[in-house]
Image (cartoon, rainbow, N blue to C red; front, side, top):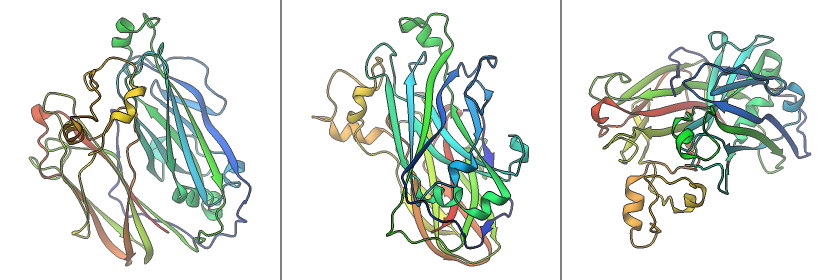
Length: 367
């Protein structure tokens, strides 16, 4: 992916107690239905799109969320992403980003109030001619429902959803039957499902603070200090925030020999210079995703890796082809009005040959 959004400015969206009547009836809607992604390096195609969906480029689509759908959301929300194989047979990064715009503005990133990444996933190595050729990713996004269904937010702003999946067809054109000369890479769909939970407390006052979105962190040109893998974001809260939570998405990339995809590093997350989370990504077996990886690749061999090589199988991977990237939720408690800072540090990262990055997104929201 060749884009990122980074915010250092002091900004907070705050809304008063909502007067919305919570919908207790299950509800589903699909902002994107079988949109076709094309060669990410190629000239943007001129092909019809789903009604209401705008193609930004071959790997990126946007749509404005309908207020009629948002008014029917309850306090539980699940997102399901479905990706069908076309003519890209490699593992790629996909994501969904929520943009906030002033009312009645067309999509233009320069006019966006703020944005947050709400989901990220990795496609498997797929041969479109071999079943299964569909991968599904599911996410629990109750906090996003709190944002989208907030009455005062909907009066002031429009919400746009961006679906990004960068792919290239060059290998598949040679390796996959039926892909010669084709430039379509994947077919993607999104569906939101909302239900009501009477045991969940209603948020009296929504507070929401975007910090950093899709930033390429490394130690050579995406860092605060060259030679170190560190990024600090200063921000200001205009009001005290109770029950604050940090929502964090990170994934490590770099497919060269010795690249950061294959080496698990310690990640240190700090708020106001106090460590709130220390973790290593990955560490689970990728064997459950073998069935999705129908194209021969360098990750899955003939031997079932969960038997006899379980330790090795868990030690190298930061993520699995065909899996979603986790959304880490960190309880912060109460944050006082005024200046604060967010920092991510990956002290052992090497980025051999100056390749690779840690893709970072983070925002704070109250419960």
